Length: 97
Image 1 (spheres, rainbow, N blue to C red):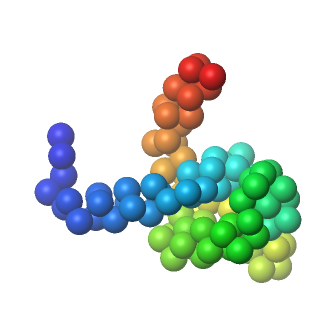
Image 2 (tube, rainbow, N blue to C red):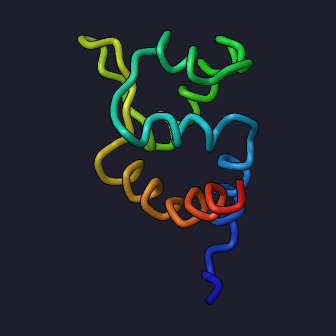
């Protein structure tokens, strides 16, 4: 069933549809990572693009940065809930690969 709040849904699709966005979420799903480790796992994603994506995810409340540890992780409420919602997509991709 579709929600009456189409603007919010379209904004979420626009955010998550950007290149590398879902990959960042997937890499952070198991737990926190420092920027350099995350960058290494992202393959050919440039540091500047990764930095921009992390800033966008932080602004959306999906990722938080721990300054003392220098790491990024999914927020407990929103980021984790989204990762759980995406799990069937990731399972499907693994079964097709």
